[in-house]
Image (cartoon, rainbow, N blue to C red):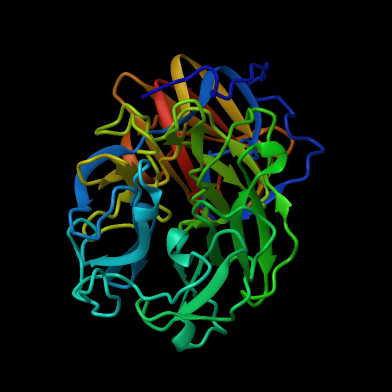
Length: 458
């Protein structure tokens, strides 16, 4: 586990055991029975001792895609991955660029699919002629607007959306983002000739999705304020007409950096959270590496500084733009405790580029980590419903973790039995039963050599 002092959230405050009125007067946060992750500090009232929030690195797995077909190109990028019932779909830009002769370059949008998220096929779509041959998996998006350069798709689960428009996409450069719809993720048509979003610089992967939690469309795209790559967001009720939007803001512990792609999405297990994997760009070397950030309103994010897929991760990432993270996270068949994400490697090289799968523990983006000296974390007052407390945690045999339940005045209502082992949804058992049902409580975690990722009441 990597712990970077520059990114770790550490505040040392005195907490008086048993009699502290740590949350008195604070407005309770209504969490009901929803899943909560420690990806930001919104739920944390106080921290004492050796406890930090530590961004996690997904573990590298197999190469799932190699761009070795004649239309593969040396700068394939801007991947979208989505799960569609028992089919996994991926759309991306395949392109060729030669600095010595830029006019020989080209860019196309490509479609692949899979039944397990690991073995991907390149179906013969027969719809786009590449060098006189239609036997390929290239999408036909028409001409104009450079829409192939950054075409990005999503499944629109808005209940009002007709089946013939179930999939939507955006693409375009100088004049703005053109909107597309499709009944099957393969046959696409433009919603109109004019761009649906115009106020930006779009030479990146620009994201649009349906936010089922807020019942609106949300977009994130590239802007260049003060000649710094940044991200703008806006909402829409119909996918075509968009608000002016606003640039993202960040908490004070998120130092300014240039951000290339953004990969922002709602977390499917906790849809009140926006999770992003923005790509930090190093101008001097043209190298990139994805970071992690989280938000509760889609505008202000807490962004961590440690890369989630470092340039030293396998393999061939320490090159020109060779480390983009795909937009989308999926769960694969038979792997309920994992979340798969995908990252590019070997970009802009003479040998074919690749896509590699990486694996997160479920909810395992940021750990509330108790170090070897131990410490405590007290949450803000939480309004909850449920008779059980469930925990996602890892506690080795030489570690320790206990949870106290406090009422809104700081009185101890319950004390857990010692928690050990590795579990995604552990039901907490009690030495002193807090008799949970509904109301307002605070949780006090006392931990040493232990990690907590998420919790919920049930």
